[in-house]
Length: 567
Image (cartoon, rainbow, N blue to C red):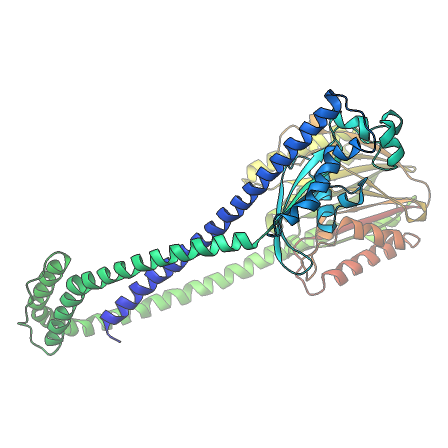
């Protein structure tokens, strides 16, 4: 296929696509306009019927017409029902109307299934005024339902309020539709319109517009073809032939006689042919120089490769050194964790702890210290993990032990001094690390809790779990130099057989292969199911459940758990 044919096909396709899109929009617009006309028609009928209802109501209320079995038939709701049954005798289009209710006093006013759905819609959405929706009648013919709610007003209460207050004739004839209040939904003004009128209008408007726009489209396309051939195709064919001559080696080829952008192209083409010969000579010179440059670059690459080899050896040595430093830090961390012999020396508590770092050096902290009869329990979580987090964890451990052995017994003063020391060290290190930290002082069944960390879990008899939110008991350590205004205390008492569980978010936020977190709720369930066992067995049950939950997923954060029961 030639270039001209492809370009004309492309332009024609674009115009045709635009024509189709335009017609699709026009069809939808025609359909919406026809639907709006149909709705407007229904609105006019509804206005006429409501005017009739209001007029008839005034006749009975203001003129005080006496109600009896004869005048009852002139009540607006009853009369409109009779008119709606007479109307089809005068109009065979399928148009119908009626006032209907889900609690009718007359059977002919009983709402059908569609109208009952409309009544439910207005009860649910009392602010809505109109419902206009398509449906199919019992024989599958398309129709539209136009529904407007009929709300109980003050003038309606006489006949629909309390039965004992209603006129005698209505009391005797009807035993339903009583007890309404002003603002209640009584029913609907239901108007059903055949959709055939809408379809006919839409089709007629669409066909008329289609014929007109198709003619315009053909004229535009013809004009585009003429312009394209004169100002695009002919110059391109001339330039194409000139290029073929140059490709055969005829560098004296020139093109002229063009205007506009093609004149600029022809001038550039002519200048190009003049330069081709000069470029060919220059190319020969460059080819000769290229061999010398390749030899020079090869030598430079060999030298660079030697430097890279030397740097790789240095990098391996540095990696070995850093790995050794990390290994030393990890070993120090493990050495400073409380061992089983220390924990057994605390006579009143059965304690079991666990820490598994996500990397070689973890950022979690826990400790159980005993000094001169005082027991201090702590747990914390340094942001991130790695060497800096591990060093900060060691600082916290040393600070806690130092303050304990210095007889700092006031929990608030203890936490405030510790924070100031850690804040100053973080500032000196030039890092943005900080940590959550909770500390507990224990004495004969009573815990004194301070600091902000994860929820503290209190395990009661029967496996019952209480969660204590520590948000208001402290602040992040190392963020501010003075946190005294944020510190608070919480006293907790446990009976023999009861205890507490401390943990870091590495447990509760561990994810399985579906990316779902382990959660505090699952941790509480495992603890409750195993609380009758010793602390070590409870700890093992939790850690085994966490690993079983995450399966093959990578451990993203340190796991730390501390379980203690009162003996």
